[in-house]
Every structure is written in structure tokens, then in C-alpha cells.
Image (cartoon, rainbow, N blue to C red):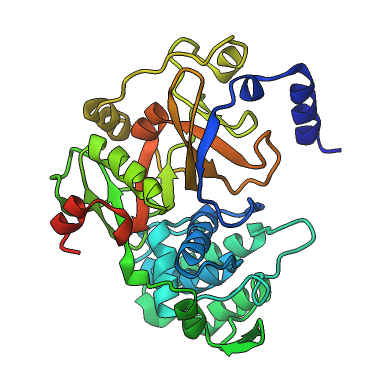
Length: 368
């Protein structure tokens, strides 16, 4: 048995904080089970693909398992070209954001996991060699000083095809022949219908802005709303049957996949301390200024994307968002976690939701 599994088993036997304090799940909109992104930096695709699976269930009433790696395969060549356009002075790596998935769905379409699994091995996905090869190739071409004409993109395709497989142009699924575009449309997914929201005071509210995080390599815009409105919009979406893709900082003591929590401990400084408390620690009240300082000082960074699929309430009446992570199922909640409102308010980078899931007031403000 793996060490991680042994630790979880021991923790369950002695009765950990997670089960002693488990909130009651009041709303569950998940569509597919938690899976693992393996040894890859593609949480952006796993999160947003899960999000689109819930969207397909909402729109068609049917559950489907979509390919995460098809989106990765579409986006990687665009990263190479963009890196060369910026003379090698641009973010380049395996990371991304939710809008990369909807962009891939727009320009290529979507395919089922059963059709394209990205050459996933028995031990799961491992992109260490792929990422190293792609970075070396992009850097070599950038150093040539010839811009994008220096690149033989057949070489890019060859590397990606070897590690992920060539993208299908048509396929059979459940007795029907599809193209990626016709499959996307059959699933009810319109990439143009999704909006991204954030909340930072160094840009005007009520307008779009380019979120300054490294993995926003495509330089896409987020609609800026006050912090209270951002939280309210996620509640509004959930209350109306819409899940939410969530980009957040997880490099802090309050985020524990093992225990299944994401909180902002104030009474206790570390998760080892709050893990032994009889009750959940008090959390600070997070306002716009506190959040802004954390972003400006780079205390908060763009680390990880997850999928908000529900809401729960604990015995003290405190509410939590329920999220699907993409680190496998090895925690007490099968890979899900409870995210406190304080944690969400402090550590959120941005969210994606269907435009029909936002409030009428915000939708009118955005001109949608």
C-alpha cells in the first residue's frame, strides 16, 4: 500500500477532524467522478473539462466523459507560436486557465475520453518528458532570432503525437459518427456562452481586465466585480443549477487535500494545529483590501484550478463550497474538498460560469 494511503487509513482509524466536523452537503451538482491529472501541469484542463461534463448533464440530461488531453493537444502548439511571437519573453509551460479549454472547444471541438485518452499509461499521465521537449524546442527556435518562421511546426506535431496521439477528425461514439465540432454541439456546449469573473481593486470594477498571472498566457480578460459580488455570483450559479470552474491559490497552510478542507486558520497557525482542535478554528473576515494586499505582495499566486460542484453547511451554520480536485480520490471525501467562504474570498484568482448562471444585473452590465 502507498504511504499516502497508509496515512489516510491511520487518520481515519483515529477519527480525524474531517469526519468529526463534516459539513452537511446540501447541494451536489457533480456529473462525473474525481480523477487524477497524474504527473502533469494540466489542472486547467481537468477542472474545466469536469465543468463542461456538468454543463453537458445540465443541458442534455446525459452524463459523458470528455477528453482532457484533447484540449491540451490543441493548446500546446498555440503556446509555442505565442512564445516565438514574444521573442521568447513570454510564459511557456504546461499551465493554463479555463478559457484555454473553451478556446480549444471553439477552434477544434471536443471528443470523448474513450476516443482520445492522450496515451495515458497504466500509472496515469506523466508529461515530464513531453514538457521538457516542448520547452527545449521553443527555446531553441526563440534563440534563432527568426521569429515564428524559424519553427517547423511539423516537429511540434510530431512530439505531441508521440506523447499524446494525433487528434481525431471523426469518430464513432454510441453508434453515431461525429466530428469534434458536431460532438461539441451535440453536447450542447457553446464556447461563447462562458464568462470569466474576478475581483481585484487595481482595475476598475464593472469592466474587463487582463488578469496578471503567468498561466494567463493567452492574455484573456476577466470581468471585474467587487468581492461581495463575486461570492454572491457563485452562490447564484449554484442555486440555479450551474457549477463553476475555480482558479485559486493553494500554497498555504489552510489548504489540505489529505483532510479534505480549505480554510483560513486564525486560531491555529498550521494545519497540524487546527487538525487537533475540537472545533473548526475561527477564520478572519476577508475584505477587498485584505485580498488585494495578498495579491500585490504575491502571497496569493495562481496555483491550481478546481471545480465547484456544490455547497455544504457545518454544525455552526458556516457554509462551504464543495469542490472536485484532480488529485485522485485518496482523501476522506473521494477527492472532493470543503472550501470555506473566507478561503474562497481570500484565495480566488477567478471563476468561469455559463452566462445564464450569473445574475440578471451582472449579465446586463456585461452586455450579454
